[in-house]
Amino acid sequence: MVMPMRVVDEQHDDPVRLAQRRRTCQITPMRSRPLWALLLAAGLTAACSTGSCDIAVGVDQSAQPKGGQLRVSAAVSLTDALTPIARKWEAAGNIHVELNFAASNVLARQILEGAPVDVFISADEKQMNRLVESGAAARADVLPLLTNQLVVVTPAGRPVSGTLPSALADDAVKRIAIGDPQGVPAGVYTKAWLERADLWRQVEPKIVPSNSVRAALAAVDSANADAGVVYKTDAKGHAGVKVAYEVPLADAPPIVYPVAVIAKSTHPDLARRFVAYLQTAPARTVFADAGFIAPDTANAR
Amino acid sequence: MTGELLGIIQLTVLVALAATLVMLPPGVALAWWLARSRSPLTSIVETLVTLPLVLPPVATGYLLLRLLGRRGLLGGLIERIGIDVIFTWRALVIAMVVMGLPLVVRAARAGFEQGTRRFEQMAETLGAGPLRVFFTISLPLARRSVLAGALLGFSRALGEFGASIVVAGSIPGETRTLSLAMYGFLETGRDGDAMRLVAVSLVIALAAVWLSNRLVREGA
Image 1 (cartoon, chains in turn green, blue):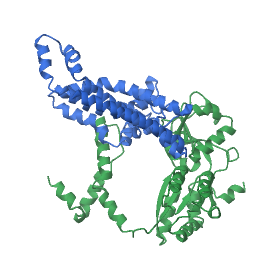
Image 2 (cartoon, rainbow over the protein chains, first blue to last red; image 1 turned 90 degrees about the vertical axis):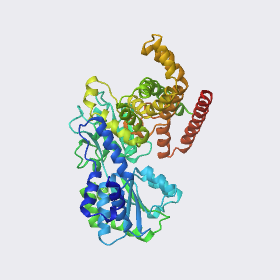
Image 3 (cartoon, chains in turn red, blue; image 1 turned 45 degrees about the vertical axis):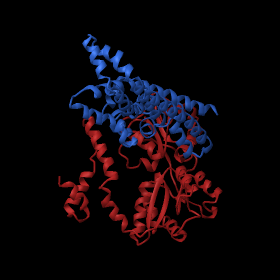
Image 4 (cartoon, rainbow over the protein chains, first blue to last red; image 1 turned 90 degrees about the horizontal axis):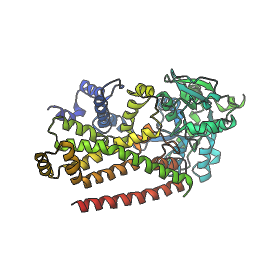
């Protein structure tokens, strides 16, 4: 009976109550509960995402001046490394960076359709070239930022028997999650590797093409796929999956992450400074810790 | 129209038809029970059945994944039986049934509530059992509403996206339906093929709307 009043008056509410409200909105991980409890929890989550729980978040964001941000679209595999780097950059007194993570082919399409983006970091050269060819980025602005490596992952506690990678063709492996080989870079690389290894023909019918490399990782993590091919950096520190095989760098096409400032950027100078920052020692340390390889060292192998 | 696109259309229609056939018996039974029962359980059951209509489809898909996935609540049981569900056509049918069921229940229930109670009571006084009353009186009188519900459920199944992509993935030739294929084509720059599927969807949608309008008009 008292609650509606409280909701209206939320911003003047005392901090303890606010903290409690926020806590009640965080749904704890679902354990074995009756179905109706699951459904109820899901309903609450949905209500939270659109309802009063956003008020607290909204306050934080309004502190930023309007338009005062750099929009960076980056391959989803960069999520864990680029987020702390952007926060470090902001902590040094720089403009706020809004990060948009998705599969590079999805991001490239968004940019081609006119999405307001200042910097694009792709997980393959093909998607960056789409932008260069259409004039959305200048060829001279593109430079290789990082390289990566493919690994075969299996769900924790559900190993694939036999020697990888040839065991991927065995009948015991029913579903293999990879990025959609028609566009998602991780999937394109995986297909090229499996073709070289002469396994693609046998493996293709088992492929679960995922929207992004992280979606493929999630399918293995939930054990709904028996194996998956993702980047080494995706699997790193991920408890639900086990790296069962590291694809030798020489067996797969080189995995290059090019970065470029987008031609229509509204803050081209700041964007260039951010790209330069990505190559400084503090940023390189974070990338290296996440398992990325700097392109110069990769060439020296 | 290439073989690939025809295959996608065929798969979509077949799976949506299968889903409609699966959702009809429980949907009609539930609708009849909701229309006739005075049990206090009706409001709870009605809420649960209607939930997928209101819940974001991806949330429904996620709940199904937590239920049916290998690490889900029923995952162990399903694996012991030895069938694969997630990332197969079965998961697609389940997602479509869950999403379409509320539409069947709501439409059919309206049919059972159209003041046909009197005829049922007459049949009962003449000695007809409950099943005979249902199949000779209630169902025939409500057939238009049931058909309209089936059509709505089928249309919903045809366009299902959010729950399907979570539980069934988008596997070419197995679970890649019209909606999933359209999205996949857009993501991979095959705009021409996406547009062709949009055209097919338009034709199907126009036919479904025309048919359901006819059913409703003649029913009135």
